[in-house]
Length: 91
Figure 1 (cartoon, rainbow, N blue to C red):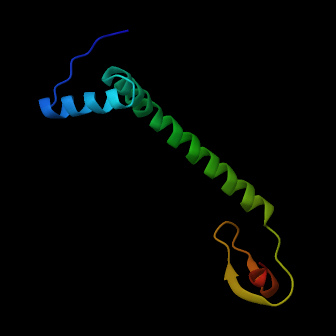
Figure 2 (figure 1 turned 90 degrees about the vertical axis):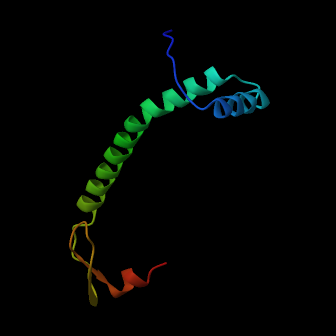
């Protein structure tokens, strides 16, 4: 494990140490947790965006039909099809 040196206000460091003690941990342990989260945050966002894109693609390919009945003129953003009045009133 590599050591690093950080600079911060003395009062802030002492307050953080007291908080860590109250949580039965150390400031070093809390920093390691924060550092891991900081690094993985981008990866989680990328995975979430990929899942959203995949779901949008699945929804777009699933609803390509042109409903029946009285159209209302409202269209979905994903596939540009009109909803029927019955579809809009479903709950």
